[in-house]
Length: 81
Image (tube, rainbow, N blue to C red):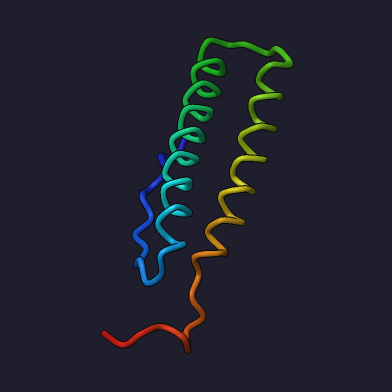
């Protein structure tokens, strides 16, 4: 399984910091879900629990994508540094 990479985001406005902090926590949760799924799969589990974990991980990934969209800055609005 792929490991999540940290996202580097410029903090141009005050609202970005809380969003980034939430994203950091969500990435940790997603990593934990993925690790648990990999662990169960390696042990040969075929229970419905794996399906539930996968569904939760996908839901969490969708939430992460929504928050990342809030942090996206259109190309024309980026400040020149």
